[in-house]
Image (tube, rainbow, N blue to C red; front, side):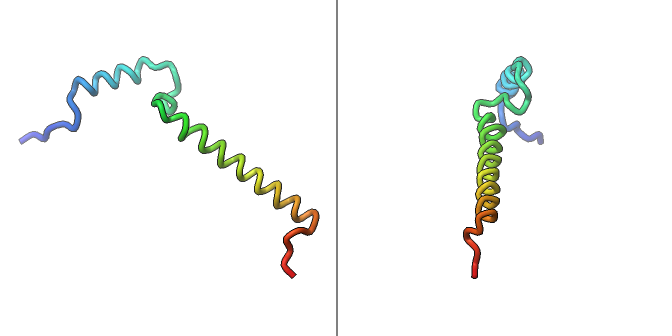
Length: 67
């Protein structure tokens, strides 16, 4: 007995043609891939830079010390 494929072959061939003809990088080919590979890392970097800057400012001015 052979197992049925998850998707029809025609759909797979259409997707293969789409991805092979796209002139972008492989990780940016999908419509929502820009969010996961560009926006989220930029947001994490910006928030970490802000927190590091705030920590350096607080240390240099002696703010937030526990007695």
